[in-house]
Every structure is written in structure tokens, then in C-alpha cells.
Amino acid sequence: MDEVKNIFVVGLNDFNRQRLETLHGARGYRFHGVIAPEAVYDTEEFDIAAMLAEATAQLEAFDEPIDAIVGYMDFPVSTMLPILCERFGTRSTSLTSLLKCEHKYWSRRVQREVIPDHIPGFTAFDPFDDEAMTRISEAGLYFPFFVKPIKSSGSRLGFRIDTPEDFYHAIEQLRESIGSIADPFNTVLEQARLPPEVAAVDGHFCMAEEIIGGWQCTVEGYVFEGEVVSYGIVDSLRYPQVLSFFHYRYPSGLPEDIQATMVELTDTIMTHIGYDNAAFNVEYFWDEVQGRIWLLEINTRISQSHCDLFEKVDGVSNQQVTIDLGLGRRPDMPHREGDFPMAAKFFHRVFFTDAVVTRVPTEQELEELLAEFPGCQIALQVEAGQRLSSLPEQDAYSFSLAHVYLGAASAEQLLADYDRLAARLVFEFDNIQG
Image (cartoon, one colour):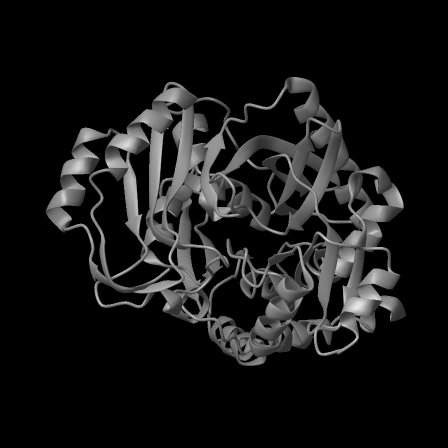
């Protein structure tokens, strides 16, 4: 009998443990949590030095072989993994290659070296510099443009800037909140050797970028021993007239030639970065009017939001990729062996400035919906009594009340089923600020 593999998962929660135990080979795995999930899921304040010390002490105290150290989350988990893997001799990409993806300014500079026609105009700026607007103009960027932190996390602290008033409003919020991202990210940067032009742009800086847009999608892939493999493309569809996501849909509805070009671009940039033995996802826009494909950003992990989609369509969660790579194996990822031809994750939202939640769907109401829609999952994101503005990781325009996962035979059926289901997801609010 093969030896049981000990796999440590940073921020492991019950939801992910249940999904991990359905993966190929899971009977031969023993999953262990490293760092409590609430420390990385439910807070916007991260002490990375303390987290690394805690994880190191926990791993050093383990008296059996440590076969893999993995994670599925964005910052701070993604940036801690190469450090922990190097300390304990497990598989991961290097910290330098990871930062060439996650440090947005460094990433754009590296992308410009090999795919210059597929990135927007950009510049870095200090939000605490009173002359920041002038410096952005001197770099050749004019209204409208987009701003975000050098190390962004989801859509948090990202703003479209159409007027000077928009810019000064964004600056006010960035100055107030960017430290919660910048300080821990700088802890990671201190452990890497950075080129001088990158070292000068620390975690307190922001990016200003030319506005790009179109059909948004994500290429999910991995690199195994130098070979770049893209195994699926997921569409990211937004609510009309706003930046908030409506749903993720898999497989992509993009034309085949556009998908093929995105796969080629992904191969080029990930090879150039030197990323290896780890999962990634790369976000793109296809601007059909201009005939342009734009690279939006590179994430150094699978997307947790896509796990259920791959399971429904391909037969197993894309967490399979992370586990196999962590163990030094070529990923065993099936294709189109799931129960549904198409799947989606819907974001059930409200577009208030703020409010207090007074009612959420009851357990009985949720059970009735799960029984009516085969394969459905509903993950509530709020509780009664909660103020919406207290929710972590929200965008600047709306609040997500629930995540709804559905499988169907077509895109049209997905939308129809969601409309029927959403009409019965009853939330109520008080103190609404529009």
C-alpha cells in the first residue's frame, strides 16, 4: 500500500476540506490546516510575519514527513506559500517569479518585455504624493483611467477615474485603507531581491492604468517542470453599467481563435516570468470592436470561485491541480466528465451604499431551493444584524449577499434558473443608504 501523504493547507476550512476529500487519490492523503481559516478569510488586517512564524512553528512540530504545503487564496496566503515551501523543501514556484505576477508594477514591466501589444498604458504613483495627478498626466495617462493598489486583492480599493473629483475621492479612501494591504505586502518584499526600479515602488504605491474592457475571461492553468498547460477558460460577466461581477460561466463562449490566442499569450508570459510547478490564472479582456486582446492581471493560484464550475463540467474541482503540483506530480485533471455541459457562479448583490441586514433566507427556504435545482449550492455571505459595510473583500459599488452555484444544459437555462431562484432568496434591510 502506498504511503499516506501529509498535505498542509493554509487557511483550511470545512468547505474546502469536504471538496478536497473528493479529489482523485484523496484516500491516500491526510489534510492538515495551517493557520486558522478566520485569520485569512474574515479579516482585512494581516500580520504576515506573525503568520509565517506561527506556520513555521506548527510545521516544525509535525513529526512525520511533510509532503506538500498548498493554498487556494489570494493575498496573504499566495505570498506566504513560496516562503514556507522553500523552508520545508516542498514544491512551489519561486518567490521571485510569484512577485513578478503579484507586484502589479513589476508584472506590467515584465509583460511589456514580451507581449507589449496586449497591455494598457500604465504608471505607478504614490497616493500620499499631493502631486500624484500631475505625475500621472506626465506619464501620458488622461481621463478616464483606473487606479488600484500595487498589490490588489479582488476588487478592493479599485476605482474608475473619470474626473478630478473621482481621483481625489479615491485618494482619500486609498490613504485611509491601503496600509492594510501595503504593510504585510512589504514584509514579503523584504524577503526578495528586487530590481532597483521595482524596489522603489513598495506596497504603499498604486497603479494608474489606461481603461481596457470587453469580454472578460480567465485562463486557468499550471506550469509543471517548465511546461505551461491551460486547461480551461471561464467567462466573467458583469452587471450592466457597473464593475460588479454578475456571474462566472464555464466553458467560455468566446470564439475558438480568440481562446487559442489567449492560450498562446499565457504560454509566452508564464515562460518568460519563470513561473514553475504551481497553478495560476490569467485574466483577459477581448475587445471585439478594436480587435484587441488585453491581459488584465496574473494570479498565482487557482480561482476558488471556479472550483464548483470545473467539478460540474469536468468532473473534479480544479483543486486537483494544486494538490498534484504540491506533491510533484503532473495534474490529473479530467475534461468534460462532469454532470453538466455548463456551470456558473452567480453573485446575488445589492447596490446600496450601506444598510443593515434584518433578514436572510431560512434553512428551510434554502433546502427547498437545493431540492428544486439539482446540483445547486447557495453560500450566504451575510447574517441578520450585520452591516453591509463591515463585509470584507467587497468592490466599491455593491455588496454580495450570496453566492449561487448552478449547472445547466445551456447559458440560457443557467440565466433562467438563476432568475427563478433569486426571486425566492429573500433578504431584508434597514437603514438603507442609497
